[in-house]
Every structure is written in structure tokens, then in C-alpha cells.
Image: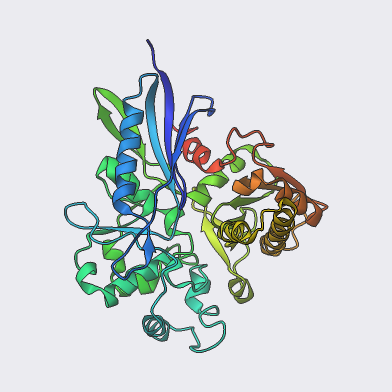
Length: 411
């Protein structure tokens, strides 16, 4: 029996880890997902279980390569950002996969910004007006600036830092597990890491001054592949993409008019690839930032922690409910209204006064939430709101499709 050629994509979210197979027309022909519990780091803070994740990745790739029906031609990866896997000389992790929500030590924060200028310590919005924040298009967010995770490690845990050969962002670590080649890639470097100077198009001076760049792998194009052989078959393996940047790719390839994408999940991120205005200090105070497209172009973005708020709120509604359905419905309606109000304010930050934006696409979990979509339509009466599935995608997640489409026009 002749096997069907496919592209295999591992899409790694904070909650769901998914494996997709796309055929030559980029239709989903197979999908499966898994969740597993978090563990804790050495400080007792919750974090991704890197051992479980590594085992899942290797098992998923093995499953794909040995499938009886499908013939894998390309494997690529998408994963959440702001997360480093620190590997040693033997290629294995030397530390936990620290959670980007882990508290950042105030002492180190003050030391950093006093040394590298810009922050007035002690203000209510301390750090939001940092010169570095503006240059790196990264609001001051502690460990959510993944570069600061490495700064913290250098000074708070030097015994671990000194064991690190490479700090790989999560998508590139997943690729490394297969290829054993260490790379950095711009969609991961450019997502509020505070590493990349968008004005100079290079690592920021502080990165070089602290010699953090010495443990960052060489930068390669987002569509680079490594050729490997499996039982005599040639397979191409990608370097991985930051998930929000990957989610933009299907829309950028198909749409010829300006649009905004709201990529929903744990974070709901509004992305406007047609807004190239530099971030202002006011933008930074409102959690605006820039992402990097797979082509290396700046993408203005804003974000809210709406998926997390939804999960927490839903659990609370269920806990507090007396079992009466109307009570649950009223409470849930209020929760969605609060989320949409926040979403509207956030999305308007990237639209600004651009009257050319006529369409907002919604991708991810909230794309299936009828109440969310309905309220968005009311809030943006002059803009067409389109859920991903209504736009013609087979999946409500464009992330995996984007990680496959990046190779569409590449031999």
C-alpha cells in the first residue's frame, strides 16, 4: 500500500499538546491531543514538566514516522513563548522549564534597570517607561521577558547558569530533540523577550554586555529545515516557531487586505501585521508589544490573560453554583462580558485609527464561543468579525497550519 505524504506538526500549548497531520492540500487528516499535570521547580513554583514533555515529543514523532498509512515528509513545531530550556554539554536539560509567571526578584530587577538605565524604581508603573522596554518592544514583565530569566539565573543561581551550553526557546528545544542541532529563530527571539533591539535589528547591548549571547544558539531563518534520514527515507525537520507568530501565517498568505488577528488561548493576543508604528511609552503601559513575523517584520500586538481568566472563572462558577442552570448561565454571561470588554480595549490598541482594517479574525478556543463572537460583533459594528472555522480553516487553531504553510513555496 502506498502511504499518503503528509506534514506532521507538533503544536505545544500551555494546556494542550497536539499532533497534526496535514496532507498536500493542507487539510487536517489526523489530530490527537494530550494534557498532563504541571510539576514544580526547585523553589516550589509550578512549571511545565520537561521530562513528560520531552517523552511526549519523542513518542509523537516516533508515532508519525512509523504510521502505517501516512508518509511524513516534513516535521515542524510550534510552541508557546517566553520559555527557555537550558541544556548542558550532554544536550540534556540542566534546570526545570521555568514558568514565565514565576515571580521575579525585586532586588535583581532594581539592579538591572539601575545599571541599564530608564527605570524609576518605586513608581506605580515602575519599568513601563524603561528605554530598554521601548527599544526591545517589550513591556517590563519580569520572567515574561524570557531574557530576564537568563539574567536571573546568572545572578541568583550561578551554579546552574555555569552548566548551560545553550538556552533554547521552547520551539527550538523541541526541534533540537529530533535534529540534535541548536538554533535560535526570530519569531521566538522577538516575542517580548527583551533580548532583541528592534531599532538596531540585533541583540540589545545589555545581552552582549552580560555575555548572555554566548549561550544563545546561532540565528537561522524561520523556514530552515534540517535533512534527516529515517529507514532510508529523507525527512525535513523544521526549527520551530513561536505559536502566535505561526497563527498569523495562514492569514498573511491568504488575505490581500489589512486585518487583525485575535489569537486566543491562555493569552488572547491581538496582532496587527499592518501596523508598523513604533511603540510609545503609553503603549508599553497598556501591555502593547511587538512580535516578529516569520519574515522578520515587526507586528504590533496587545494581550490580555483572558483564557486564564475564563478557566478560573468557570471553575468558580461551578464551585459556587447551587445547581440551578439559570444561575450558572447568568454568572457565565457576566464572565464573558467582562472578558470581551477587556478584549475590545486591548484590540483597539493595535487598530488605533486605521480605517483600513475591515476584518478581525478570531482563532483558538474563543473562536468556538458563540457569546464571545456575538459580543465582539456588537462592539465592532463597522468591522467584520470572522471565526477561524467560518474563514474556511478545518481547525479553530491556525497555529499548526501556519507551522506547515511556512514551507508551501519552498522546494
